[in-house]
Image (tube, rainbow, N blue to C red; front, side, top):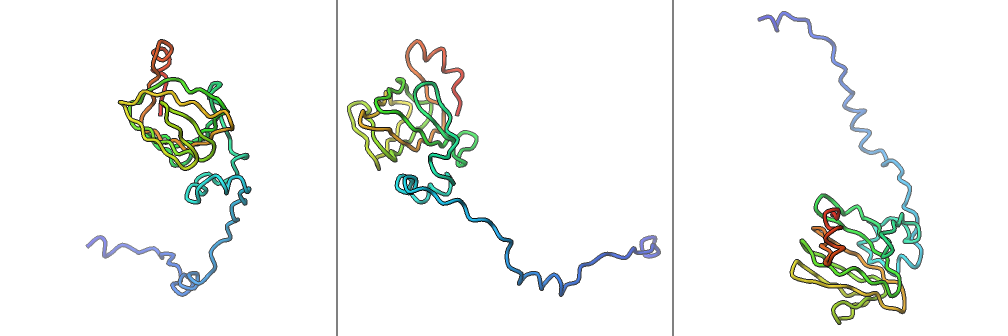
Amino acid sequence: EMLNEMETPEADVPDLDAMLSRLDEPEPFAAPPPPLDAETVSLLPKPLRQYVGVSLKDLAWKRVGRMYDEVRLPLSRKGLKVSLMRLKPGALMPQHTHRGQEITLVLAGGYTDNGRAFIRGDFAAKGPSHKHQPVVDEDGECLCLVVLDAPVRLTGTLGRLVNPFLRV
């Protein structure tokens, strides 16, 4: 009864015709992404380019020790690290195994791992039972897409000191 006796304030209801006419308006202009240079287009598969967004030379590469440069991609999320790794010719990665899975796709150059050569287009899947130490080929830089679902586990004395600080 009280609700029926209360005064109802005027509601500001938008005009339906005005709202419907907005449906025909063009979408707001979005600037196209910057063009990628020829090297980036030739090295990165088309589906990967949208996640990188800029030319490889314009990425914010971060140096990891003296071993390699890395850029995390927006595909990364809690418990999953997706990154591009750029390794110098002859670079020797530390010997390690894995707490989870590591998938590596070679985009340029190559490396040898446990006597097996990996070149552009090859991929390697490693798990906790694999102990390895990749070595980049001497004839050029190696660019890889690497996906980890858990941190690597370095082996040896130095590894025992460093392992507690490794994260995905």
